[in-house]
Length: 256
Image 1 (cartoon, rainbow, N blue to C red):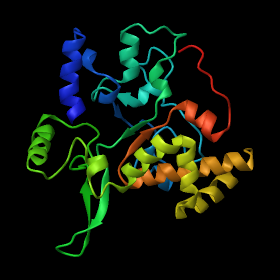
Image 2 (cartoon, rainbow, N blue to C red):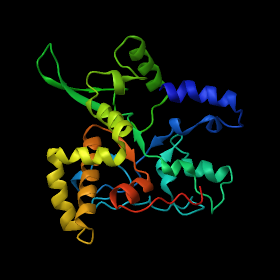
Image 3 (tube, helix red, strand yellow):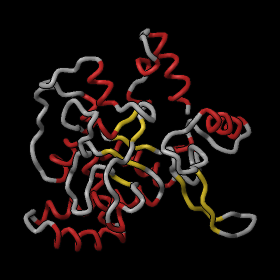
Image 4 (cartoon, rainbow, N blue to C red):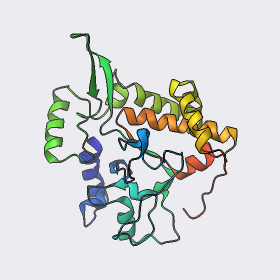
């Protein structure tokens, strides 16, 4: 909410633009799942949105309005109608030029929620960490009004809840893991998770062409996707992270 309202206004006045979308930066984008949901892991449409059940990195389907082939940026939206890819086309990004935005992995915590034991009732309940976690991919004006009231009354920390809330277990794990040991190190730490064994067995059956080391990394990635999905997060994985940290390939920064 803080990024959507405050930084958008600041960006707009710092770099004046003809449209409101011109004031948006990478912190304002929303991850949106555009793939058909299949199987148990993808039934909710959450988790890593550009990862298939078989552990393949996939692009969204091409639509009639696309002037170019879909890219990584088609999963990122500035608002309900405008994707970041459409914005790049509007400003005239050349076909041969790659956007630096494709090098980033995005974690959309709009509907991030955690379970905790209510000390009053001694019953387990779910709570939104940075919002009410009502399941909407895009929040409207009234949603922001009510969320602002919750923020000022101390019910929800919309700005720092993902790190300061005592219930924010997964977001803390992601923040500290990525900042301290990097993406590959984070995947390595997930191999101790009980879900990893089941994911590894599935990957061995579905991706027999991969080496054992690649299968292990991919199983850890699927574990990450499942963990994020069960907590209401949507994640857009950078293709570079998949090629380098999962498949063990080299870096390719040409064209950015």
